[in-house]
Length: 170
Image 1 (cartoon, rainbow, N blue to C red):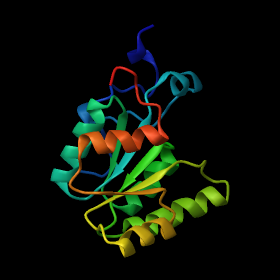
Image 2 (cartoon, one colour; image 1 turned 90 degrees about the vertical axis):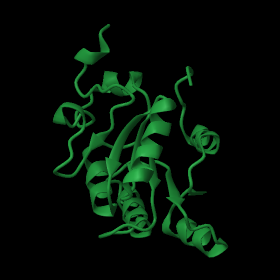
Image 3 (cartoon, one colour; image 1 turned 135 degrees about the vertical axis):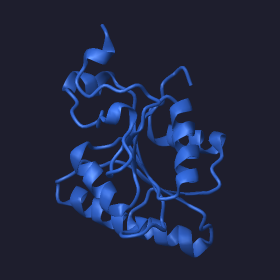
Image 4 (cartoon, one colour; image 1 turned 135 degrees about the horizontal axis):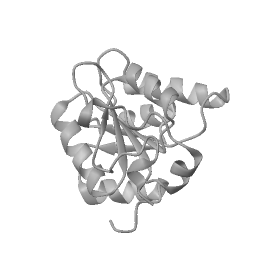
């Protein structure tokens, strides 16, 4: 079966850009429409919520090397839109972002899940803030774990494997 013929199919290394001005490959929103069959056969979808371009590049490259599909949101508002559009298998959420920060976004996602408007999925804080108070704030906001930057590939992969079935080739 040619996977490229499935609606919404995208190669693992192709992130989907959400806001205007920067389009992903061929300008398409490749994660928007998935069939039930495509959902059962696909790699996990990770939503990266990050406003810093360098951190975006590093995280997206690490995720591509792990064989997961990615989507990018640059702030909490874009993350809420992305989750309403296509439910991710996991969210990596920066804490400090313009507009809506990661803590408020996590609270709103958990409220939507509590109301039954979104299914449950793990949310992992991804931040340079590493104090005990920062970890406690993440957990209180509804995050499942608190990862610190700079990102380490092996550590990130280990954390993701707790929550996702990563492709076996990675």
